[in-house]
Image (cartoon, rainbow, N blue to C red; front, top):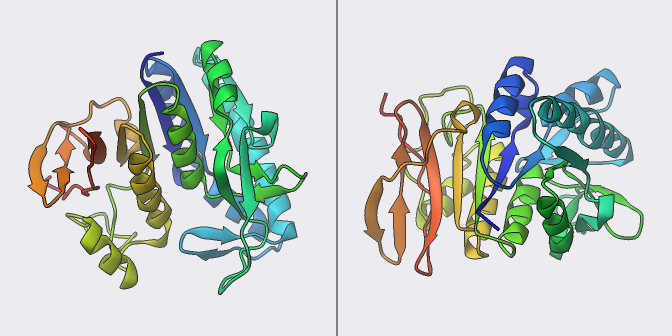
Length: 295
């Protein structure tokens, strides 16, 4: 099978009909086998507020009580998933919507209560993504569209971070063919201040990431993306790119800057968009570098 592309789309892009329409057009135009993973946090938060249900987040992850689980299941596995599937089908992409419960696609384990009790939140089990199901769907020419709702295999639905689902799906896909993982969202990069697009962190290495995280310099919503990117390249995914959704069809850059210790440091840009790329080359895991804004 030719190279597989796994794309994760963020909830803020999904929340804009115009941005969603542009993304769907671009995603449908991607060549080769592909999979889509979507979040929907902004819409879920808004609906929860309308229902009088408080939304609580820790390190970018939603605390999910029983009422919140009902809301996110309706939003993620229902409304958003089916809207995307319908739009992709209209764009000529043979999409099929899935939650983790469908065909045992993604199995997770309920997170044990610790310093934070996340409630009905699942962490993806070891080998929890059904590789043979992915292979069957891709061989049939279908494009799986995954929501972030998973299942523990015993009948309990669990809310799972969509970035983590995307990383796990990409790792599973890499068992089938070389795989690229693309995180698409609305921001210019990893920001110190989510309200200031000029606050892009110029560089993140393994050493600086721990310090930046400890001091709270990286916005909570970006933590699962970076954590997942590191795990994905360490587990066999060929490359990871974080970029603005509007840049989905832009070719990845070739701005190889050299080595830092045992790590190849990559960053690049297209003519109009900054992006972060993490790649695996000759057994060396390349570490994410966030593009500085050079406009």
